[in-house]
Length: 229
Image 1 (cartoon, helix red, strand yellow):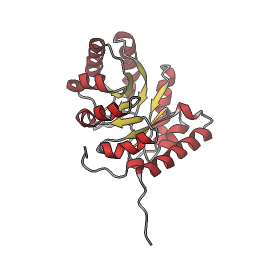
Image 2: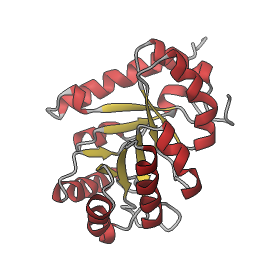
Image 3: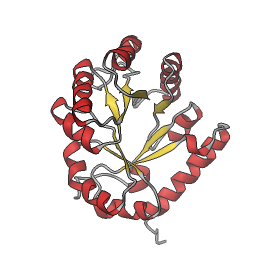
């Protein structure tokens, strides 16, 4: 038997169908869920077919890799929405503010303060999401849940950052719905509209818990290797 390889375009349409069905099942309007195609390690040639299909939300983990790909792609397609979903170093903040539309990984005071200064300098204000370490995993980035309310208040009211939501990455071997519910609770009590949660294996569950951004990479592009630029 010969198995035909699934192309990223075919996989993308499968994922968008599942997003649509999940939103419908949760009683939500489709436009309240944004699918972020996570294109880290994939080349401009891998990305272009999705752009040709009309998809515009893409996620990257590393600043330098994004700078190697997206300026050229943006010269060809003007309305791309680029999401920074990986850890952000303070020495990369200038590039992040200049090139990204949404930053999902605000996770510490020093970074938040640097973002505020650079946004004022550039007069550019990409949306910010605060990353919460819902599993309190020491190896993961993210603000401790016990500190989340105070940190949100500091970012919004002391630094005047455009904080619009929260992001989490649940522990790999725990039930993700518990973490999605936990993140939603923090967002609700802080009047935050956006939840960035859910990846290739659990995005449908995340949608049922209110995710407004789901981050799907391998289920669209396939397994990752080294960056192909």
